[in-house]
Length: 121
Image (cartoon, rainbow, N blue to C red; front, side):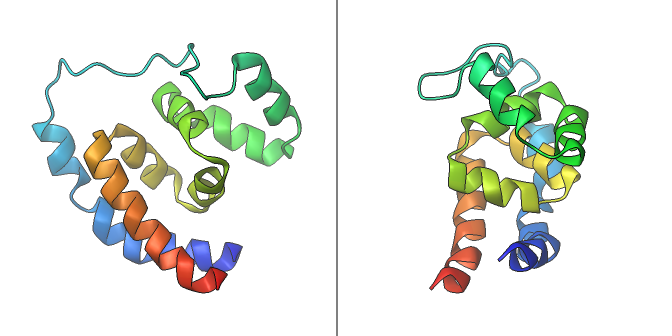
């Protein structure tokens, strides 16, 4: 499945994310951004996040730490299933996805999940 997810990131998702620069430019510069230091309801606490990260291989930890704070916070807001799919995306796609407004994120996730679903049956 991991190989399939890599293929998704290289093909179908690229189409979805192609419009991101235009979308990002159209967003208000004053739009609030999530606070990376606070866990939202249902999200792991910073202590739980640290414990989860300690279980990751060193290369995965380094990759995570290289992401912008907004992308790191967005990662923790995802379900475990979406977190797995998120790792299959390129870093630039991860950042773009984390910067989208919620309706656009959900539309992109629907496309990702529809492409992954056939491989899971």
